[in-house]
Image 1 (cartoon, helix red, strand yellow):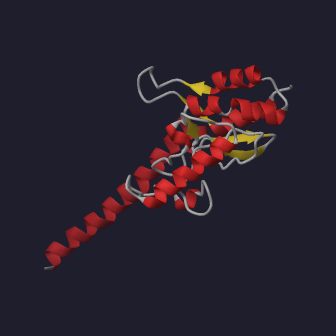
Image 2 (cartoon, one colour; image 1 turned 90 degrees about the horizontal axis):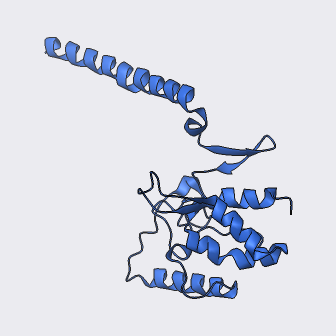
Length: 189
């Protein structure tokens, strides 16, 4: 029995060292050397202070800012520690009530029918930092009025912030809400 146990334990130790320590450390080192910003979380800094990440949405509620899509991360929107989908199905009364309330809130803010789908639905992770160009464009009048700006100037910012599909065909056009709001704040109106 010892003849079988010794090689098995040796292999466990060797493969743990290789695959549990050496491989992850080497991949981390390569990532840090090749793409340090991405490997550190794609953080956005302003004036030496981290203000967010391009990968995780933030809950903007002021009329002066573009709003993100709803978050399904529990009582605190965009809580990365509680990433999850809502798991509510199409027949869920709770989902219907939430979407109806969101449509009403958006109508009160001047966003009328047809309401873009991402304006009232959560993403799979509940952390998506992007909205559709349609949802961003639907908010232009509200943001422009709150800031005392011409809607055309704000619409131009949305156009500049719109990311095209990857390689022209993968995914959909999208707008990163944090980056758009930072660009809005950075403008010297």
